[in-house]
Image (cartoon, helix red, strand yellow):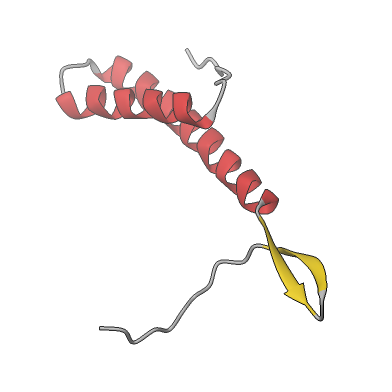
Length: 84
């Protein structure tokens, strides 16, 4: 019984994923129930991952280059700081 549910937003999907995690970790569900929860959890995780990827695409940095404002795509820095 796999039903794709639409979640209103990332936060509600994440909250449901946390509920599912607690249910599965409890060990109190039958094998069939656990498989259904696991499947739902995978669907929710994909939804959350897709939303995060979409958000990352939408993040823009405004930089002042040569006196003009330029919109640049956000890129995660793989900083090599040796602070410590």
